Length: 223
Image 1 (cartoon, one colour):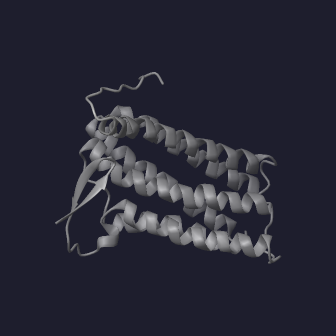
Image 2: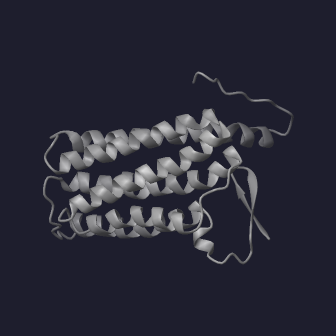
């Protein structure tokens, strides 16, 4: 057995899992996010610096790249973290195996087709919608079964991120002229909010361990 320190806890992992990539959400989604970040930034560099033309309709270059970073790269990192942390938070088994692979596939398809423009925007919209719905469902299950209602705040931010995805695609098909700005900045603020929520959970533990004397740090429930 090997142990992995995650959010201050140790998760024991089998040394020779039959399909290690599909054994934990952070493995496939962190790896996918890292690979996609290289492709997305390279594509933006080619467009921005080299003048490569990407066929876009209904979406500006700025919104095209921003959507890739907020709802492509960053949301994958969020998914990988939450799919792994949910086991520690609720005591329920984390998602693994073929279902995790399907969820990763739902995320990957829009990333691939949008790199080449908006010709297949409908395909991207359908797969992105299914990905966010699937992610919310697999996280909501353990929370409801374990009655860990304090984690619902994390889930609601995913709901708002899903709404941002919808707004972006509505903008892309001409349904809301200002939807691109709302989707990009709304998604960015939700990611900041989610980061603050997770930070306020883990920072007290790091501080208590680091100051060198016993200390009890509390978070305000209403905040």
